[in-house]
Amino acid sequence: MEKKTLWQGTVKKVINPLNLVKVVQLEKNRKVTARSANDAQLKLYSKILKGDFLHYGYFDDRDISAEDISFSMIYKAQERYAEKILDLIPNGESKKHVLDVGCGMGGLLGMLNTRGHKAIGLTPDINQVQYIREHYPNPTLHCRFEEIPTAEYQGAFDVIITSESLQYLNLDQSLPLIKTLLRPGGCWIACDYFRTHPESFEKSGHIWEDFETRLKQLNFNLESTEDITPHILPTIAFAHLWGTRVGVPVLDFLIEKLKVKNPGWYYLAEDVIPQLLEKVESNLKVVDPLQFSATKKYMLMKIT
Ligand SMILES: C[S@@+](CC[C@H](N)C(=O)[O-])C[C@H]1O[C@@H](n2cnc3c(N)ncnc32)[C@H](O)[C@@H]1O
Image (cartoon, rainbow, N blue to C red):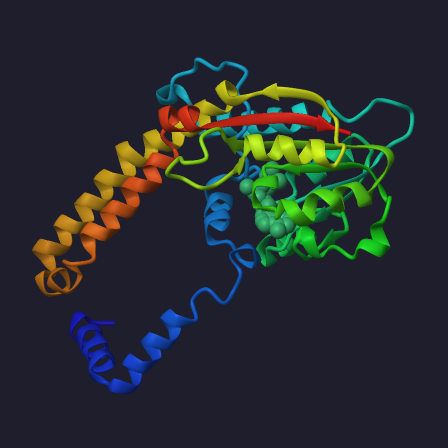
C-alpha cells in the first residue's frame, strides 16, 4: 500500500464514529481470553529459542559473562536444566508414568521418551498443543492443570513435573490436586522461581514462605531442595544484555527515524512513546540479574 493510501485508510477509520465505538469495544473486551490459552510472550520465546524449551536453563559455569554466551549455549543450558529434573526421578527397573504440567513446546516430553518413561503433557496454550501434536507422539491434555479430569487420572502418576510452570498455577486448587493425581509413594518434581520479598515490584512467582507453609499444611515433604539461582542468572543476564544493548537502541533508532521520515505519524504517537519506553524499562528490570537475585530465588525440589 502507498503511504498516501495508508494515511487515507487510517484517517477514514478514525473519523468514522462507528469505528471509534469498535475501538472502545475491542479495548473493553481485551482481557476476555485468558492469557494462558494463547500466551503471546511464551510464543515469542518459542520463536527466539529453537530448542523446544521455555525455561531459564541451567549453566554449570555460573560465572560465565553474558557477553560470552551464545544461543547454542542457552540451548545446552536448557537441556542441562531438563537433565537435572530427570535425574530426580527415582531409579528402578520400572519406567514411570509421568505428567508434565505446563509442558510448553514438549522438549521435556522428548527427553522423558528417550529415557523410556510414559509421559503425558498438559498445557492450556493452543499454540503449544498444536506444536506438540505435530512433533511428539505423547498424549497431550489441552487444559489448565486446575481443570484436569480428576476422576480419570486419580492416582495415575508416579511422577508429576512442573518445570517453570508452578508459578502460573493456583496453589489453592493445584496442591491438593497434585496429591490426588500421584499414586501412593509417587513424587512431584518442581523447578521454579519464588519471591523472597513479597513487596517486590514484580509479581511473578509464588511467595516462598507462603509456599513452604502450604506444603506443611498438606503434609508434603520437601525431600530435596537445591537453590539453583546462580546457575540460571547467566540466562537472565544474557536477556538483559540483548535488551539494553540491542533492543533499546533499535527502539530509539526507530523513534528517531519516525520523527524525521514521518513527522505526522510521530505527532500522533508522541504521547504514547514515553509510556512505551517506560514499559520497556520495567520489562528490562524483570531480567536484571541484580534485581532478580535480590528479590527472588530459583528452586529445584523433589517433593513427596
Ligand atoms: C515458562 S513455560 C515452561 C514450559 C516448559 N515446562 C518448559 O520447561 O520449557 C510455562 C508453561 O506453563 C503453562 N501454563 C500456564 N498456565 C497454566 C495452567 N494454569 N495450568 C497448566 N499449565 C499452565 C504455559 O502454557 C507453559 O506451557
